[in-house]
Amino acid sequence: MQKELEYNDNEETVPSKTRRKKDMRALQEIGEQLVELDPKKLAEFDLPEILVDAIKLARPMNKHGARRRQMQYIGCLMREIDALPIQEKLDSWQQTSKHQIARLHQLERWRERLLNDDNALTEFAQKYPQADLQCLRLLIRGAQKEKAAEKPPKNFRLLFQELQGIVEV
Image 1 (spheres, one colour):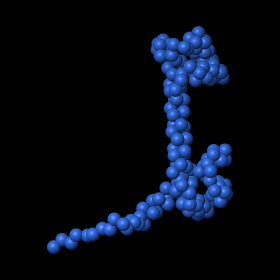
Image 2 (cartoon, helix red, strand yellow):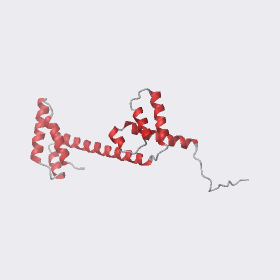
Image 3 (cartoon, helix red, strand yellow):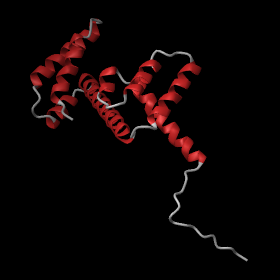
Image 4 (cartoon, one colour):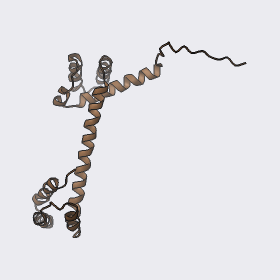
């Protein structure tokens, strides 16, 4: 004998305790990200004053227990506002940061290749025809001489800055 369970579609389903805890933890994590932001970026959000004050109080806290309680309080305050736009803005900033880091790594790889591989300048010129090759050659030679003479890396840095102006995202 199998009993069929009847479900009433009109009833609102109450989230389970586990789901509520996960939601609260997610809000608390957003609050932790807000605590780590510098004040200028924090000001870009339209947050209630009580939440901003709680975030400012959490910043200097070092003791684990006190900070944990303050973060729970921030999470509790976050329940009163719509956290989705905040999370979207934080995610977009994080993606921008990752993109900038990837670009810097690409520039660093080009600089190393230009300093160590004689054919790299030809390849670079093909990929970036707008590059001033004479300037690059001078900077490469200067950086190689500085390294050999163990002098401060002035041309090494200038080469990186020149590459930044040439290599576009």
